[in-house]
Length: 88
Image (cartoon, rainbow, N blue to C red; front, side, top):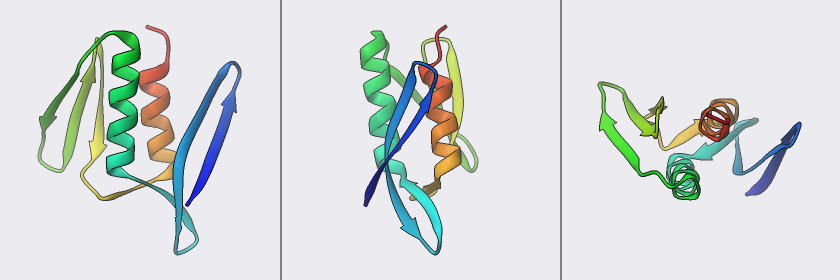
C-alpha cells in the first residue's frame, strides 16, 4: 500500500492507493470512510441510497455515485473526493 498525494492549488488530496495489475486502486471502504470525514468536517451527515449498480452518496447539497466494487480506480476515487471537497 502506498499513500498517493495529489496537489491542486490549495487543495491537497491524500488517499490510500494499492497497485493491482499495473493500475492504482483505492478500496471502497477507504473511500467511504474518507467521505464520512469530509461530511463530519463540514457539519453534515452522509446520506446513502443504493441504486442499481452504484451507491448514491449525498453530503449537504452535493451528490455523487460511488461504484459498488471493492476496488475503485484511482482517478474515479480522486474525482469523487474532489467533488465533495469543493467549496459549495
